[in-house]
Image (cartoon, rainbow, N blue to C red; front, side, top):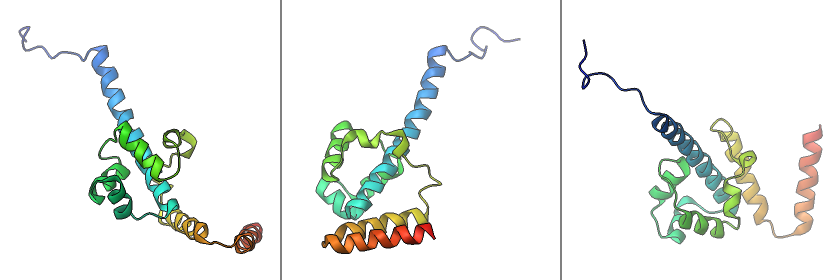
Length: 138
């Protein structure tokens, strides 16, 4: 038989809630990281360029984008400012990507959007937009 000191203890309700919260925090870290990567690519920054502007290494930024490291509020604010968005945009559930959505094809689309944003002539943008609509409908 077990003595009182040897009896396995059941986790308390608080411990069970904490364990659930840790998992959800990790999920949101990953989702926010993916949103940062998405916004960075759209803005036309390489990982090294954005990291330099933030005063961190590109490896650290990569960890943020993977969700391996959590981002402080002040760092997230700085990232949002540099990427021309708001901190709230990183938390919008409908805009957060799953790992399956961030495929090579999706990354290609982000790169195409980045290139499109670099076009300076409005008429050229109109023509490209019209071409995309025509191709998408056929």
